[in-house]
Length: 192
Length: 122
Image 1: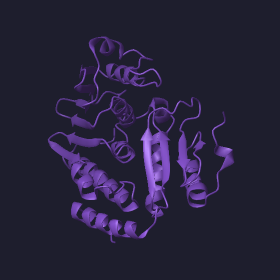
Image 2 (image 1 turned 90 degrees about the vertical axis):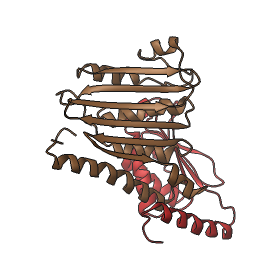
Image 3 (image 1 turned 45 degrees about the horizontal axis):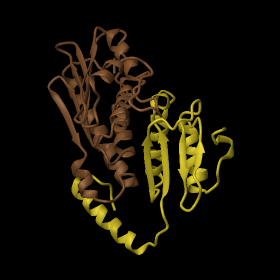
């Protein structure tokens, strides 16, 4: 995969497959410590120690019919090639948090890519899950939780064209504002 | 209704939609499913989904239910898109790029004509 945002989409798909009703995605770029941190945290069915140990291997899945988890070792490898690492904390019945860290300035670090499109795909494509996004650059953070919008819409589908437009603008503008602010602070965004 | 800019606008939009819904009979909705397994994502499924969303938004299409799902188990056919028009059988398209997705939206979802050349080949 060519962007970290596509990996985030892939990891979040695992959360959906694990039956999560809430998924929280954090992307944090810390230029002071030269670190890029991504976390995907869910309240899905979780994994026991045995499966957790195996999940870093390719072709391991918590179900037999689909290739769930295929992307995890790919992302782990990508992080380790950039002085980073991946950790997974999981408890059966409680959920899973996958964290992956990169040296932000590493030459081989994949671009973050289109985080807005990734989040919108998840939010609009899986509306029964509560989606939360935190996008942070240094001390500036954009937080989005879909609870309020969904409560206002009640039973109305998110894929109403006006709702798509609203959600797209809200997410895209929120992320852009953080990036523009970082640009003003002199952070180089060429790598994004 | 003008552009939606706030949660309050969303509430008003919902109330408005509710009124229209009450007047309209059960015509059903078009269902679109995009396969988003690891291989689908690597093959461009996110861009395919985005193209469909953009088409719905730009053409103000009503009554569409869009879902993304895991691997649909059609290896070598990703990105896969399933379309079900109201009271019709499900149609499965394979190797759906954003360009093909727009064509399917125009010709099949809006026009009602199945695009045989893009159907999944078993």
